[in-house]
Image 1: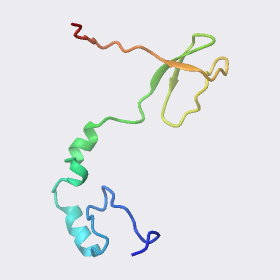
Image 2 (image 1 turned 180 degrees about the horizontal axis):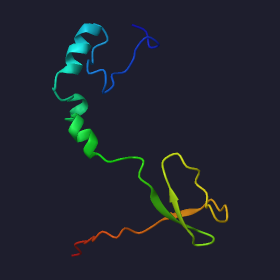
Image 3 (image 1 turned 90 degrees about the horizontal axis):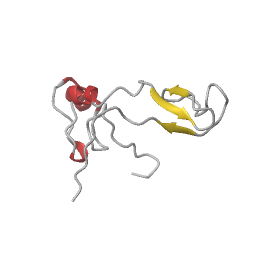
Length: 100
């Protein structure tokens, strides 16, 4: 098989082999067996638990100190002044470091 003909396996196509038939892939997709490729144990429940990528992230503008909310795919630019340097806000979660 040449390099151009090879298609890498994905989570939807659970067969790692290039010579697998479509009937085998359909039967494997209907079963509830987790995909264990690459040392990871991924199931549909664990994929949902990874997090939603569409949630907004809050940033601070480097020029006017305005609070900017961005989602995935938004332009990295302040909506007030157009400045392109944004700083991620500090987390509100309790973080404790052990110093020795």
